[in-house]
Length: 449
Length: 185
Image (cartoon, rainbow over all chains, first blue to last red; front, side, top):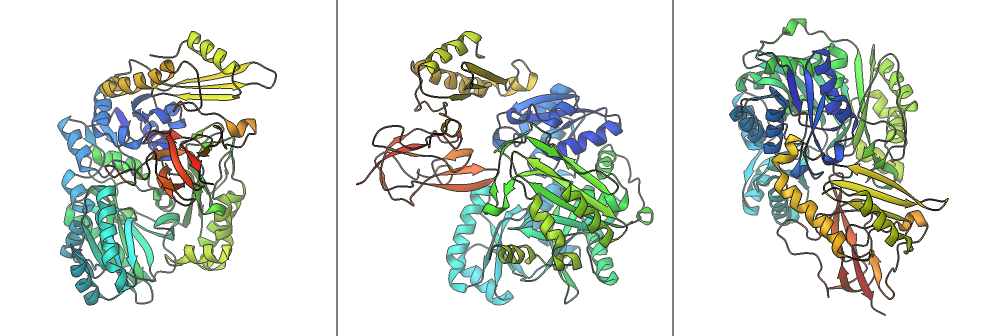
């Protein structure tokens, strides 16, 4: 099949991003938007916008029925789910199949295999990947036995979770019983699945992930990204390639990610996340994200590949258009996530109306956003309003471009974290590169203390 | 179902007789903002949220129509517009008034920021407080969800909850009165 019309079941910058590629490919776009987004930039850019419900995500962007009905009524042959919302939801994929609409993403089986984090762990082990010591637990007693086996501290994770949500650290054995109970209750509320598992909590590690593309038969990688700059498990800055990895370790990680994709006969764009212990030259499988990711532009910057275009080609049933040996890497790229939040006031969310939106432009600078003067930043969705991506011949050049880009970015009407990014870009350990996931909490504490 | 110009005129007549400078009315189908302008008179800003008759609106029309009908009914059954009507927000910040005791002897509880108001910690759980609940300054009376983050709403004063004005799941803004409490001396 060749898609003539694609429905985009998402909002914000990723909706704009998908519309851009569709236009280049000559594909008509239909945006499925909530009432809060009917006058948004993507709604204006799309060839047509359909309202799928009230602002609350549960009534609109998480409503698979309304989304599939919108695709049918608009005559769209495929649905691009973006990231977040229903992008990794097997029910949406099934509804699409039943309605004879193509879901631009992996198969239902693959979504289930990686969506259930314990199932994903089993597949990783079967594919020969190292995993963090741990396993499922259903009671505090069982958790205690596991913890004694794997060593303290431990991390409790929700089986139905992911994206950093539903994780709890336990450092003190006396806190275990109550934390397990709390974690199970929260997992049930957040994911409708009370099951949890425990892993050894690796106190000092880096978060490095490998981008995959697969057509169900052939799997290739598009290199790695370092996403260690995180606040409460939410990524803030990502870069490609991951700095200061030994060539041997990097090659092993790429091979492991491809092996995991091959084990699943993976179809589409996906990312295998690893926890890296650089001191020991070891890495562990964390999870797979079966969707396009927020940070995909850094990979696009260093490979020149349009990942959304590849997603669409794969969904159309074409074999991979790229051979592994044709994937070339050039330079270094860093992305800063601009959020509508007041970082000086404990990162308090800052919804509102944007009065001024001036974005940087120039060589090596890419801005992915859905914001313009007058745009409303609604309180119903997450706080990311733009991504600033800088690309340079090497990391030092990239940092120079990024510094200039941040200095030329002005947003008024809502608070943003632009100033925080500008400070990190000047910070010495970040400039050296290769910091671990505890970095952000450390510098934030130092800045406020 | 949409607001007519006559409706707006009628609301303006009532507002003219009031001390409020701004009114924001939100339903499933439209949003209306009326502002008293500096030069006297009012400005109007209307946004139609869902175009009637679009195919997808029809998909979930039953629920939406009844919700919109309820919202409109709230307005029409209250002959005088008072701050206690759940969808009307007195714009205290805009007029420079502090959102304090709008009813003599009672303390208003306002949300810390704009967001969706929840009365209970999770769906199906008992509400944090009911009318008659005794609260302290740091008693949690509800949750505001803003941009996927949950923020506790504290009573802010010691006393007894005497009015609960905000509805579970409702979008509330900073000047909005969620509850009122009678302070203890």
